[in-house]
Length: 200
Image 1 (cartoon, helix red, strand yellow):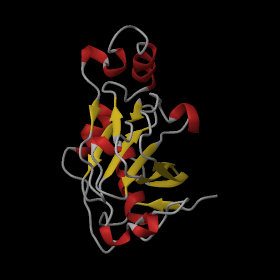
Image 2 (cartoon, rainbow, N blue to C red; image 1 turned 90 degrees about the horizontal axis):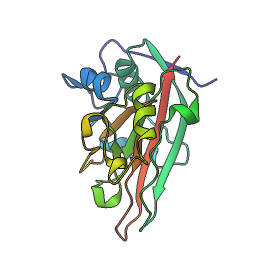
Image 3 (tube, one colour; image 1 turned 60 degrees about the vertical axis):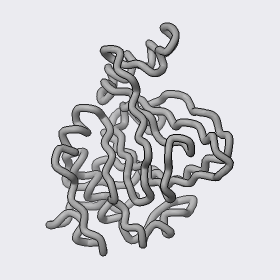
Image 4 (spheres, rainbow, N blue to C red; image 1 turned 180 degrees about the vertical axis):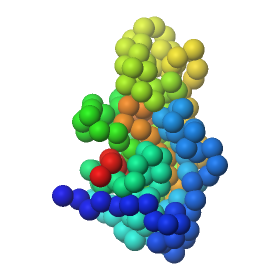
């Protein structure tokens, strides 16, 4: 059983680089199903997250942030993996993590780039209006509904890509948020750590 992490008295105080969830981030995550947290992962700890099962000294900080976004007292990691995007990798399909990792528990995935990453290297793209399973199902059902449907969601809003995402930032999304990874159109490899949390 993976260890459970609780929220420390001061968010981030267990690391060498204290971090507090920015004002409005909790509301943004609840509304949109995704949020970008700049500078969450201390740069001096990035190297330890470049393994096939990313983990390191900032785990308590990452877990505390995930718990705050999920609104729970403690979380555990249910998946850790390294995402390696090779040059000329195409854009991936739209999907939610809930279908893959289990629909019954709330999930939060942190995408942690290990280098400064622009859209040309491949950043996450999120569909607005998909914070819930119903919203995600509606969006995914509409992907084949006509030209440009894959870039639209409720109300015809364009899907949101985060550009750029700096090393140390955390792009967080919920278990039912529809997302895809944009393709790597460069001649450079792109590395990111992914950690998915669920309530303990």
